[in-house]
Image 1 (cartoon, helix red, strand yellow):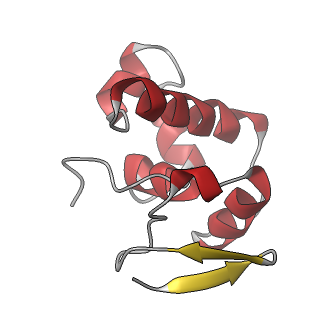
Image 2 (tube, helix red, strand yellow):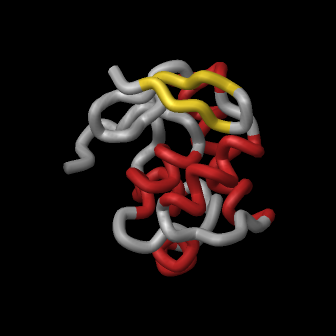
Length: 105
């Protein structure tokens, strides 16, 4: 597993670029990961999704699907694609320091 230095912290990632230890995550790391994914600035709406996803993983053990995010009115699907273009569940999970969501290609 690749290890990277982000903001002075040594962090392990899997071969697809997902953090292997979600407890090492913080918002400063999220900002760096977001920029790598083409998102220059994380807004409160980004963090609505990120925080919800992290809470779901804590409570249920897996990251929520796009359908669940929409069903629970976290953000509408159209906005989710605007916030995290090019694969919102996968990209949001990566920025949130979570493993790749089940069912994502």
